[in-house]
Image (tube, rainbow, N blue to C red; front, side, top):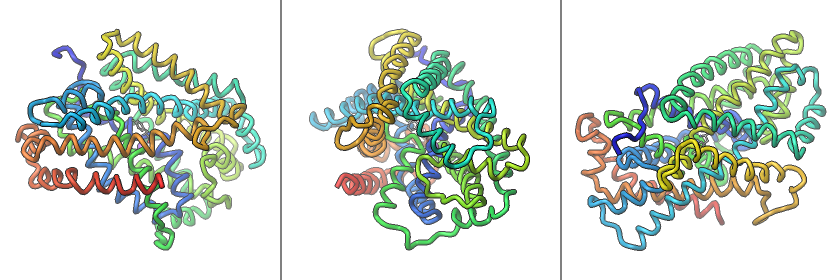
Length: 460
Ligand code: PFF
Ligand code: NA
């Protein structure tokens, strides 16, 4: 395995992983979940889950991926057979199945994520030609309903988005993923700050900040807790082998523990800044923040129109920048999803990277097409009472991620405290104090049980 790809630099590796984490989950899903679950209290819970559950699982994922230096299916297979761990036959089978589930989840996620990413791409184009200026709420609402249920246009944008993603991924780990992230992530940070300043300068912005930062604990229910954990997994890309695959390209000197905390800090910051952009703008024009998934596509264009309507050029620029931001964030995440399956297909079947990417992209377009149709003509087609899009999201965020997280913890636990310490400290070259000890204990017992309890509750 000497010629296996690696990231070229430390900063490149961290930016690629942070690029995977920062995505539609931060700018689209986070504000909508926060709005629906009561604001600041939800955010505190969510941050709690990030630190106590998602980051430890993230550390497991990366440590396992770097150790095995292969795709996520082979990681589960190889490590559960390695001489440091002894696993019974039935448990070994469960590990194999988890690996296979990760690959499947990576594909499913890429398919439905590309539908929403396609919308953002389409909105970027519309904003670019000034097509969203001077619309009322009814008009933006109707425009979105017509657009998302159309059988042609969203599919065109979906295919365009998949092609762009494939174009970056096909260039490989260093020239594609790493270089793309190094360019897009700084641009994304700048766009975020510019938009936050614009939003904060609006009248009544403080109301939005209050909603974000003044917790009302009476709003916390078990359902809120469940959603907060789901969001923590989703937003850090944890549980389906994505960062396991990226970490298989890390160097042996990479400080995985530090990286995990950095990635979580960047991701949380982006989510909160996205909240600072969206809620003050919504409040300042008197729009309720609990508008749901349509917040970003219906409410926001209108918010920008009302808020900056007095200066049309500013309104044009802010709207365009916002959708551009959303598209780029989606892109650095989608390349990481595609890499899960690309690494698997190319290594498992020995096909060239180019052919693997092309094949997966084509199948993704077909599955994405079906998801997109579930917003229109196929909305009547349901499985377990869900449309295809919702079913895909359920499978990934509420099934594969928690299950994957539990088995990553279990595999890590099989290595035992001494071996785990060696993995995290790079054979003792990094001083982490008592962290590995505490960590071993947490991932052996506390975290898997916690995830299981919440998972079972969610299914009930
Ligand atoms: N973390 C990404 C987001 O917040 O948009 C979504 C994601 C990417 C989830 C990659 C899972 C994954 F493997
Ligand atoms: Na995220």
